[in-house]
Every structure is written in structure tokens, then in C-alpha cells.
Length: 230
Image (cartoon, rainbow, N blue to C red; front, side, top):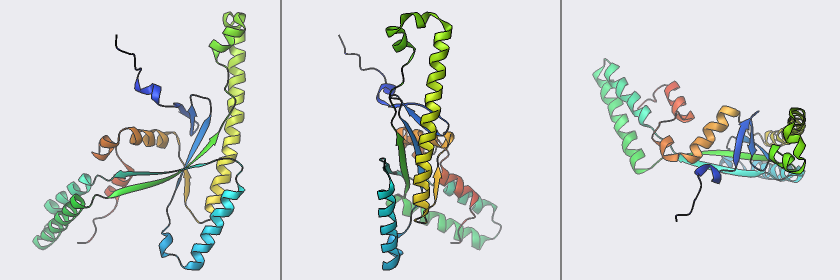
């Protein structure tokens, strides 16, 4: 008899996303900060030393763990190439038509041989709490509570109150991390619910995102930006 392997969701520790926060199945919480990069090699030696010491002080100031994640994915430029093709059709001047077409062919050939990778830098801020009892746990140890609506409501209220306390402590941690990173002149942004959903979709559907089925932020910016001069 074949062994029951369960479904994919059993392998994902994420329970839900709410209040810009990841809620895991063990009741622990996470907030994710997106951090802008800096070209360290272009800095002077004095600037490099200042950044290194500032980052060291930032890490030493934390009394809780953090996780750094670098997410790399291949950029899809099909929309940009299509934009260039449309520009060729709309351009009345033959000379500019040829220049744009040559530029398009160069970009397509270059990316084919040298895939462009987009890197996203993330800092994960955790908060670990004591696992909160659910309805089944309460009913198992105190059977009569499972039969009374008042008991269920009380358990839900207590769970909600504990969750708010945990969220507040997590927000304080996130604020501390943000202040520390901003002190190093790094741009930071806490991901909201929608951005967290998109991030995890990208994690678990890399091929779909690469093909452009999901509107990626880079591709959206390409539509807004004017065409570079060939």
C-alpha cells in the first residue's frame, strides 16, 4: 500500500500573513525588511572602515537573532524587448528606426549569453513565543470548555491579546533593526502583506516569475522608464 506523503502545504512552515507579519505554524512571528545595496568596492578606505565599524556596532547592539537572505532570480526582459519593437513601429524616422532595432538586437543577444540576475537583500526579524493553546488542546484538558461558547470566546480573546503583545514586541525589534541599518546609510523598507505574498510566490514559483506571468517590480519599472538612447 503506497505511503501517504501528504501535500505540499505540510512542508511550508507558514501559517498565515497578517499585519505585515508572517505567522508560522509554531506561533512564532517574522517581519521582513528589504534593504538596499551599496557598492562597497567603490567606497574609499575610510568609508569602508566606517561602514564596517557601524555594521559591527549594529550587530553588537542586538539581543535577539536576525537572518539575512539574498534572493537571486533571472530577470525577464521580454516586455522591454516588446516595448522596443513597438517603438520601432511608431518611430517615423528611418534612421531612428534602425538605431532602435540595432539596440534591441544587441540587448537580446547580450542577455541570451549573459543572463541578468536581480538580487534582493532581506533581513528577517523573528519573535519566538510560547505556543498558544488551540481549541482542541483546551478541550482535551478541560472538556467542558469545548461545550460552552463562553469558554471558546474566552480562549479566543486570550489568544488575540497574546498575539497583540507579541506583535508589539516584534515591531519594536523591527524598528531597532531599521534604525541600525539606516545609521549605515542603507535604504530599508518593511514588506507589507501584499509584498510578502508576492515574495513567497516568487520563492515557490521561480520559473513562472521568470516567464513574466507575475508582474515583477523590475519589469514594472521598465515600463515607466524611457528607452535608453542606443
